[in-house]
Image 1: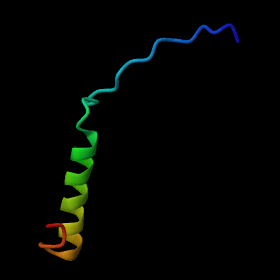
Image 2: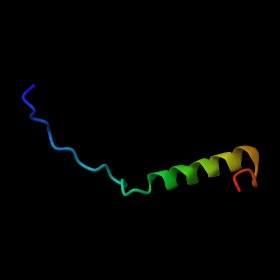
Image 3: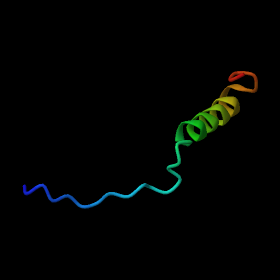
Length: 40
């Protein structure tokens, strides 16, 4: 190991909003599974 690492890159759609998108998807999933009003 010489300390030579390849330079990383920021993945697509990685703009600090990932958590908001994940919560939105989870709310949709839970609402479709258990009905509306579950995630309000």
